[in-house]
Amino acid sequence: MRRIFSGVQPSGALHLGNYLGAIRNFVRMQDHYEAIYGVVDLHAVTVWQDPAELAPNTREVTAAYLAAGVDPKRSIIFNQARVPAHAELGWLFNCVARIGWLNRMTQFKEKAGKHREKASAGLYVYPALMAADILGYKATHVPVGDDQKQHLEFARNTAEKFNQDYGREVFPVPEPVIMGAAARVMSLRDGTKKMSKSDGSEMARLNMTDDADTIAGKIRRATTDPDALPGPDVLDDDGNLPQEVRDARPACYNLLGIYAALTDESWHAVLTRFEGWGFANFKTALTELAVEKLGPIGAEMARLRNDPAEIDRILADGAERATAIIDPVKREAMDAMGFLRS
Image (tube, rainbow, N blue to C red; front, side, top):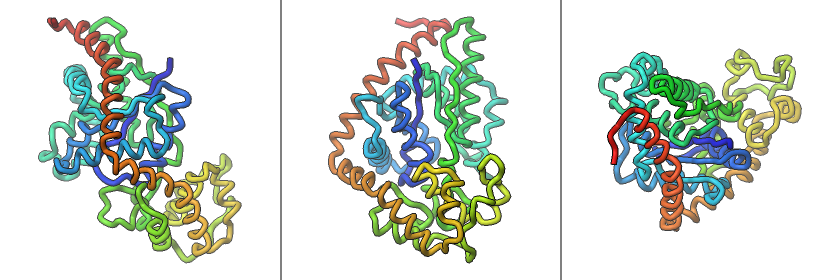
């Protein structure tokens, strides 16, 4: 049996990067794995979340899963806080993992920035909770982008150390499912920065809930440069876009990359089709494509937002199914560690 676990934080508006980098892949992977998808609200509160927004944001991520095509009958969809074993296993793994491992985590350094001493302890030990998410379901595979490879390695190290320390093969060592270049979606206003829900400008991102007019307006105003679109001669011998080429025209290659990701086409195919085009015509083509792909998802999310009871029912059902899997694993881990339990 092959099983995957992955999740998205309910910490604000979902955008094109979330869709291409994660949610679209969730839809595809449910055809090949036993799939468990969390709305990871416990992770979200490692940084400040407005209490009035956490529940609506949790429903919003759930609506995005459903609208994009994740089937709650074939996959398990739940929010993390409904399944206490995540936090319980997270604590056990805090006691197995090493400080040195945590000190090497670059994401903590990026999120904490210059205010490391003021960051929450939860943000620091975040990887142990992520390890619990994965190992608690004995997931065999985890979809990862570039920014999550360290966290998976932490989970792998934790599984290996737990098994070694307690002399039992409680946890399988999960393998990565590497996500491709589609996960690399940059800001529409600055092609050197990743598209982010925390960006102060709404014009910097395409939200999954944007309607056709909003999508058109954002793409029309997206940053470009004065030159015509390049051809496939800029690619290396393997058909990849060299970093130095991307760096020379970041806004240009961001828009071309979005087009390629939305169509599932190679760089070579897209560059061949649009070689020599001006940005005005290309933006028209990109707008039509984005509206075609994102429009129905946004409309379905809007419908689901009007039925929160249905979303809550799906989350409750998913939590019950998730608990049935993770609780026996937690008990197995506690028995290995020697806890006295009823």
